[in-house]
Image 1 (cartoon, rainbow over the protein chains, first blue to last red):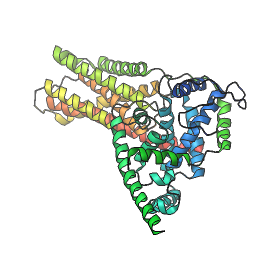
Image 2 (spheres, rainbow over the protein chains, first blue to last red; image 1 turned 135 degrees about the vertical axis):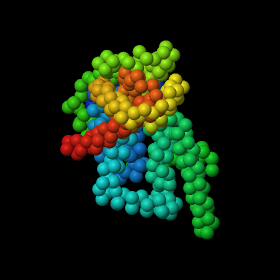
Image 3 (cartoon, helix red, strand yellow; image 1 turned 90 degrees about the horizontal axis):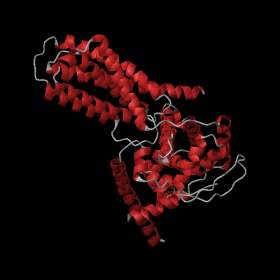
Image 4 (cartoon, one colour; image 1 turned 120 degrees about the vertical axis):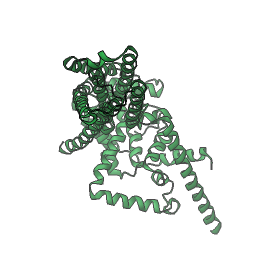
Length: 213
Length: 237
């Protein structure tokens, strides 16, 4: 079920969603565009292939933004409902991933705003501050994506996730975040400075504890 | 620590992220299956932007036809060429940006605030270059009248633009509202340039340009209301 970034794509064909066939693959990006075009044409098999391929990336995106697992499930479902409702806004020939991520980002922002108005926000902020206050090296979960990205601001986190985890280009990230390439570059640069600092400190601490033992 | 090492650590960490459950994916697929049907993709940006510019021109011309082309008649050739070509280019840029704001994942060349600022500065510069009568007779009364006329004509442009792009989806409705307001405001300014025969520099610099600002502010307000209404509708559904 889990498919890596842009490396491969097993595509379901025909009208029966249980029947899967691997088609000879074109360039993965153009393959996604082709699936999207078929989805717009009302092909359910193409829609399920897209769901299978894109969902793991979107799920990682939500989890990386401190969404709990049930929240990430809800956000994913909400995102797909929104994608389905506005699927006509994708225009053939345009990059697919920025279109998906722009909608996912919108859903996440909506979810966050809603959470702000409820007590869930207090709980989440508490969790976040605990996570940030605790050194990743000490939790034993220090290598988790959420823990690694914890010191970054929200906008830096999403840029790093799209660039380094989803493997999108600077131009695609700029499109997904409705900003300029320069702004994306700047956010990525600042995020890397913070990550370098954080990871060097973690490495140093690990070295010291190994020496002691 | 080198960037390559950080990349590697991030990739490894991403690989350990909990996987999305197959049941969730099935649920998503099942939820969209009943409404699967062919949809018509939106037209290309230039087609939509062209439509928006035509709406601006039509509303400005219709307004001036009703109220009189006094401003246009009083202008010399240079003033006509410079003002209306500038308005045309700015309307094209604003129209393109409005289309981009209504289509997720589009390339944004300028932010909504940047567009408003850019358009305002360009108009101020053009007006300052062309008009040199620095009297301020009936500054407020005549100004308020022009402001009201400009904004009133911007409203139909905003509504018609929304009609053209109603199938779009603004990921940031406030930003889309500002851009739509800027576009509508340009139509309002266009009407004033065609109609208003008051060529006092301060009148044009302050009150005609203010149409753009007020219209963009109204657009932002509508976008904000739309965002909250959208959320309420989601909650109901």
